[in-house]
Structure formats: C-alpha cells, structure tokens
Length: 150
Image 1 (cartoon, rainbow, N blue to C red):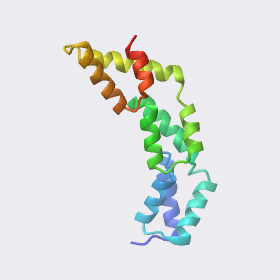
Image 2: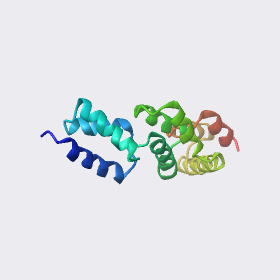
Image 3: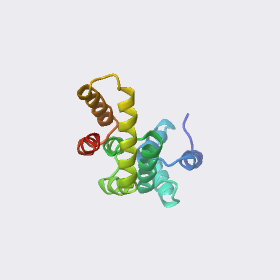
Image 4: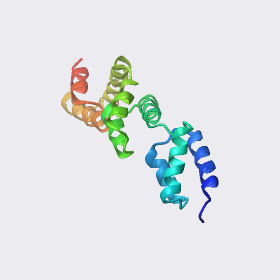
C-alpha cells in the first residue's frame, strides 16, 4: 500500500515523537511505507526542520539510556551508533554525556558482582571470566585491568 506524502509524514511524526530515532531508522520506516525519491527526502527534511528528527539528540539519549539502563560500556555504545550511521561528531558528544566517575563506579559494581558469580573459581580463572564478560559489555580493557587489581 502506497501512502500519500501527508499521511506518511503524520505517521513518521508519531513514530519520532514516541522516542528519538536515527535518520537510518526513519529512512527504513519510510521505505517500508513505500515512500521513495523526492517524497522521502522532503519528509526527512520536514522532520528535521520541525525537530522530530535530530541526530545529536538521538546519539546522546541512546548513549545515556544504554549506559544507565543496560550498563553498556563506551565501546559497545559506539559500535551500535556506527551501525546507525551516526557522525563522529555526534558520537563524541554522546560519549560526553557519560560521566567518567559514574562510568568507573558502574564498572566497579559489575566487577564485584561478577567476581561473586565466579567465586568458586581460582583467582586467575575468575579474573579471566570477569574480563571476558566486561569486554563483551563494551568496557575498555585498561579500565577493567586497573579496577580488577584493586
């Protein structure tokens, strides 16, 4: 079913108002609605002009949310922002949203929790499992090693 430009624009306004979206997500949604070419670009421009779509706002809220809710590290957040084709500038600004002290505190908590989970292991094996887990969560190796030694 092909949607008229006005109907598609209204659908996308609701889609973007529900939560921040990346340009890539909105473009994909428009293609699913079978909106192509000039109409697609005009709708994208209208959404940007009316502030429904903002790449920087999306990147910052994504970074804050994934860090605070899912306890993701910077590497994993950046990886997912790259998948959404977010600019380097917006990624740098999004990383500034994460307070360094809060970041290290969360990392300490995760290390403590995982060490308890692997308490029956010997220290070397326990540390290896904790490191593997934290790297998979996107934390930087130098931060992990500094804090695991404490």
